[in-house]
Image 1 (tube, rainbow, N blue to C red):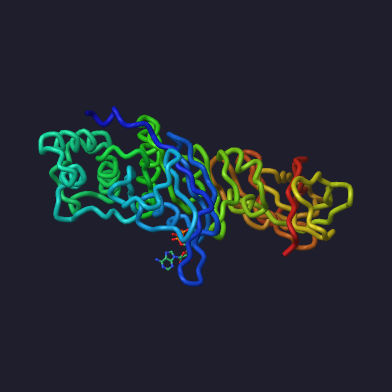
Image 2: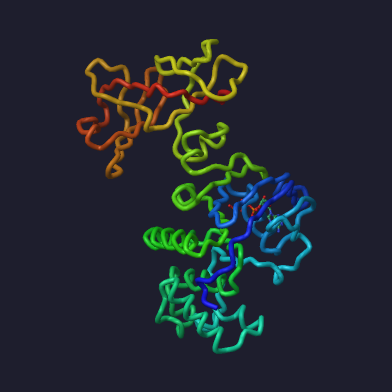
Length: 353
Ligand code: ATP
């Protein structure tokens, strides 16, 4: 059997999953469905329960209550080594005394796959993760990125139906991380393996995942495609957690609009009772133009390549970030008097802090 003839990816479902550690509630009734063959990112602030949820699928931890269903079957009582899941951790966690090939062949050896078959499969997997000639090397002879490739090959060696990745790229330097992001996405799609990827890096989640599940305090806040999440966040928490967001004071006018920075904009989502609110606005929705009599001032300018981020002070001392195409930012230096205009999109408001 070659590794390209994988078993179909499994559907995974968390149902009302709860896990406490003493007085800490790690998972507080998590409900989430992962489709077969999907790459789902679990995203959220530190301590929101991402790793705990992943460990439940691997069988390294058990819920106080709730279910983990794989293809509709509750696997909570099934021991880890009987589950069809492969896991890659943040730290490389390879066996230091085994070669790359023997690391990959470890699982098949435990399962009594014969030596020739497991060697052939290990070499095939190593080639697939871009290490065709490194099979004889030991972990200390490999770079961090190469070690994570071996860990990935090892996780795939038993042809699992679910691949679990726990911040696998966070220990790597930026360039290697970018390359491996692309390679993991490609591999995942080629194999069709259901993959749950834990990360606290929103850029990683948005660029790799089919859908992103944002967790907060052990519960699901929103699960949607990256584009949906970015443009139509279900809550103020998601709006602020995903992408950069300005939070500036405004005042509800009573007609479904909010007055903010001298403009009136339509409001989406729920309205907090108070008239004084914070308005959430993306930096790309803030337009800045030079105007000798403009009431706002550029404070700082950060060149980011194709875009330039300005930090601008509005009348009254409120700061706002604005992302401009770099060409449009030429001539706007610190101290420049400017006019600020907010795009006429509906905006989300939140109780003022
Ligand atoms: P991070 O991004 O920091 O890794 P996370 O979202 O993966 O965070 P978890 O590791 O799932 O969060 O932890 C959720 C909560 O449960 C945290 O408050 C954590 O301290 C707690 N926790 C997790 N494992 C244990 C444990 N074995 N014993 C006690 N508390 C734990």
